[in-house]
Length: 130
Image 1 (cartoon, helix red, strand yellow):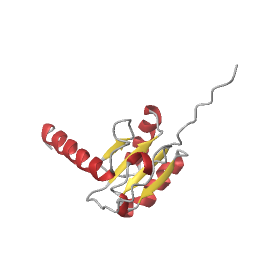
Image 2 (cartoon, rainbow, N blue to C red; image 1 turned 180 degrees about the vertical axis):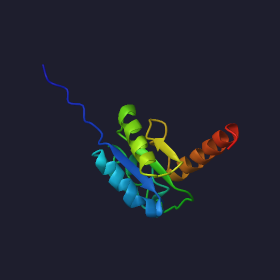
Image 3 (cartoon, one colour; image 1 turned 90 degrees about the vertical axis):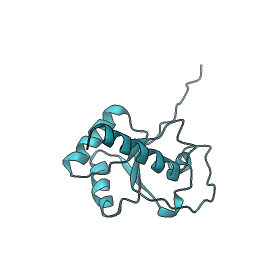
Image 4 (cartoon, one colour; image 1 turned 45 degrees about the vertical axis):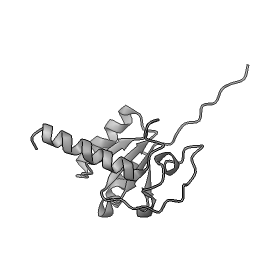
């Protein structure tokens, strides 16, 4: 009987357009042995799967930029994500738009994701009266 090896996805925090918060995010992620990866501003048209380094995804050559800042979590389970979010709060690191790589969004672009996250954030803010 052959052993089946299931490759693991490294715990990675992808970040887009976070400016001066980059160093603090990198320090916070490193404290939990997580990798940080910056999405360059001109890569907002690329698929999330490609940017996260998933097998089977290739660059589409898109050189699109998008407005806003966001974090995209890849390979991080819910317990570890809770730890990261708590560490970010304790460090005073506030980046409202966040997402997890899913089967649905890995084929979408960062530009698309930012628009979806903005809509969700606005709806939640209105609902909570903030």
